[in-house]
View (cartoon, one colour):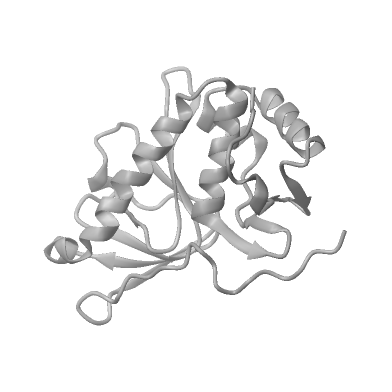
Length: 204
């Protein structure tokens, strides 16, 4: 099966206009933790991050995935502990508090995406939970290719299990099942959701 190159017009591209002219920029490397500052917010210009906490026994709990156009920052959460981990190299703009109100749409989007993910995490059965999470990722990080929507983010089976409160073995088994049923395609280490399968159908 031959795959076409990615469409440069990614659905996750930022549509936010610049705020108050040129903002200070900061770059982070993959797996770097963004510094815990409450006096600024970061707007992601390029790359992807996840926000995480962990339980008393050390189990990771993923709180969200964020990409271009999203606002992130420690001031947006009361969860402790709380880390913002870069999943790729990340380019950000730094927003001081005096201009936060100018990007109200991004702040509202942060709330909406958090609630969407929270809703998905509580869906049953686990197969439906996983499928809707893949759809959510495709809408947030997807790029159009000939075969459908490619999730342009390398999320491991272990990381998915941490989001969905299940085991890595279960995630692997269900992904293989989805692939056998033609609900998804594999491209290298990425997943493609055929457009015809974006709606949830008969997942049990």
